[in-house]
Image (cartoon, rainbow over the protein chains, first blue to last red):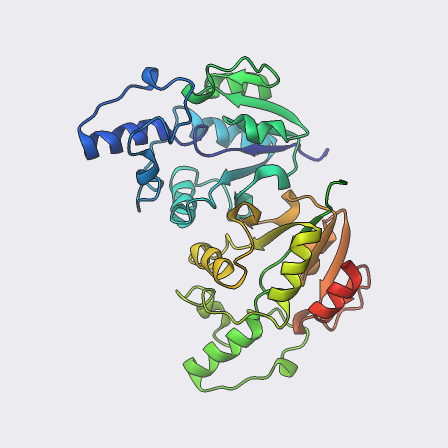
Amino acid sequence: MAKKLRLIVDMDGVLADVYEQFIQFEFRESGLLMKKSEVHGTDEILAFPNGNIHVHERGFFRTIPVISGATESLEKLNKAYEVFIVSSAMEFPNCLEEKYYWLKEHFPFLSWKQIVLCGSKEVVQGNIMIDDHFKNLDSFTGRTLLFDQPHNQNSNDHSHERVCNWDEIIQLLL
Amino acid sequence: MAKKLRLIVDMDGVLADVYEQFIQFEFRESGLLMKKSEVHGTDEILAFPNGNIHVHERGFFRTIPVISGATESLEKLNKAYEVFIVSSAMEFPNCLEEKYYWLKEHFPFLSWKQIVLCGSKEVVQGNIMIDDHFKNLDSFTGRTLLFDQPHNQNSNDHSHERVCNWDEIIQLLL
């Protein structure tokens, strides 16, 4: 059997709905109810008045909602590809253990061997990368899928294949 | 200026003196004072009666002594190489945050961007890897330095350059 292609999958903005979490935390903190449509083109942390406080709070990453379709789709892809979950996590050390248990809860078919929590993603290698940040995709040498999110929607950079949801990813990769 | 070579450095058994920590935890637990010379050729966790309990304890990884010469040597190498610390940590999620703060304490010149906590190291790429485990070095495509530790001393496998301390690493790499 041929060796499976290695698929590198991001967490925040691809598996985890960080915008929804920022909206909920902001509303709880300040009473301000923001909409995803208001924050186009701005980095997701900076788009929310208290974003930079909330990412350092215990529980922020542990309770993020899962992006629609992510669990079922990744379970299928996990059979066809050598999947690694690669998340930029080191900037917020409070999230390290939370990310591990979040994956264990929502993606129980993944093994701990498939998880990478890092600073820079330049150090990982694979055949395909799904990520919502240009900085991660730009340095990757394989095929690159840009997961559509408000912060990347104003870009004219078309160097990566844009995907808007997990159905589109399944269409492309399976 | 030419791009720096990427140097992948392991934590446990290369920067962190896990044997010393196992010895101390075992002595505190059971009164049994073991010596490094007693545990040649055995996996470091299995070599100690309560090893598998201690690696899951809070504080085990946070308080490991630094291997002699590691801090000064890595500070020098960090100027000449693109250094990434890559540690198999995901099997023991209690250690994730501890490892981050341990590095911050003992290797303050490293940035969070240089830290990778993973399951399998197969996903990382670089030019040189320093590690004390064959399983990590065997799948690496660059130059491989095996850091001498009791668990790897009985091997007849000479496919990696064996180094016995940080002075030898500096001799080879600087």
